[in-house]
Image 1 (cartoon, each protein chain N blue to C red):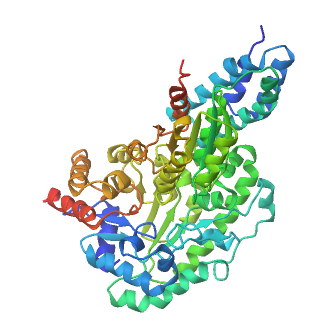
Image 2 (image 1 turned 60 degrees about the vertical axis):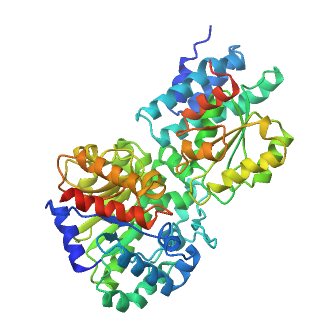
Image 3 (image 1 turned 90 degrees about the vertical axis):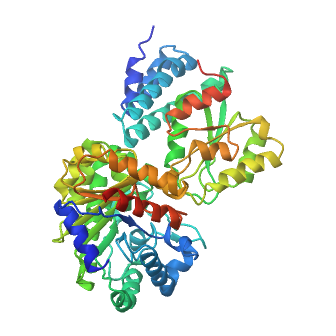
Length: 213
Length: 344
């Protein structure tokens, strides 16, 4: 049985090249892509999230672990698709219209990918119509809306209303987050969930999709 | 700030316990123009609106201090504009500075701007020069040289995630970037002091310091903050409303003697981490309480904060961060009156 601890450690420590090399080595040794996600990348990102929550890790450490994960997924995604493996759930993420900040969204994307979700990142300043179109084109289970500014928070509500108007509100769970956003605000606009941190978004997404182990 | 307010500020920094305890707020474009029923863009572009809104705040809340006072700013665009960053404006939106560096390697091509000539900086200075007679006629003076901090500027030039990743992947280039930015900041602060001899304080704002570990702070933050704060002034004021636990023990050695921080930590913890060497300005929750709560919520939160503290030296009661958008007059008055009554 191939030892995946090197890969786990490399992801946790944000050693991008070492992590990619360890992932390739594991694949060459016959480890199934799904096993790599479940036994190494997922647990590693969970540990990164724990270290961040406890104040031992900071944003650069989180970003480096996320980058390692992203590069490994670039290798794994075609293999997973080839093998017919389904992601835990599909997520569309974006920073809402009028807001050009991306750090929170990027961190959430990385944590969710590490947690086994397939993430489509629509970028920043995303219009409600663009969110709706993305979901219509490729059905997803979760839509994540990010905002850093109090002035752009109302665009979250407008986006949720756009899903309602398009008749697809019930098809997706909509989660929100960002520095000025609170649980109270999330409830008031009819979101399905709110996460205070990027790390906590993984459990939230799992709860909402019924995949929490 | 008038002379009395300035003396109060300096006394608190020296450790005097004043009665009543002072209150103060950072006010700028996220709150002031909308509070005064103007759009953010009118506030930036119309000197009369800028002056009237600042005077209106001072007259509405005569018992508190507004820092830095008559802050001539263009949101996050001020300093990045000098580096060639495109400023994006909306009628009533916060302006946004587009990044100018698209890879760490591009730092090699970055030139130090001239604060007398580049970007919006001449506009910042001219606005204050034009209004100086009226500001002084109202009993106030320009007290602070103000700028965003080195990491904050660097993050706007590169993009925040890109900058924070690059301190891990390309540390030497990020030191080069911070060197250029800090050299510029030193010039920018010196220029403000030259034009306004009444300046006796430096005010830097840098939330990015809160995103990095203590070890990275020691490498990428404190050496540059120390250089930027090196001027011989009475007040060295720093704002970081991101988490402060990692950086707080290091700040006094950079020269900082006044700190506005967020709501992640208690005043007692901050006093302990700074070894009570820095006067603290905080920390009623700005959004949930000061902006969105009722006056009773504000009174309750302010009283809790004051009761939780044994040592009230080096304390200015404020919110944990700058004045938040949409904070209403009655809530601000509730905070000020609660502090006054509690002290009595």
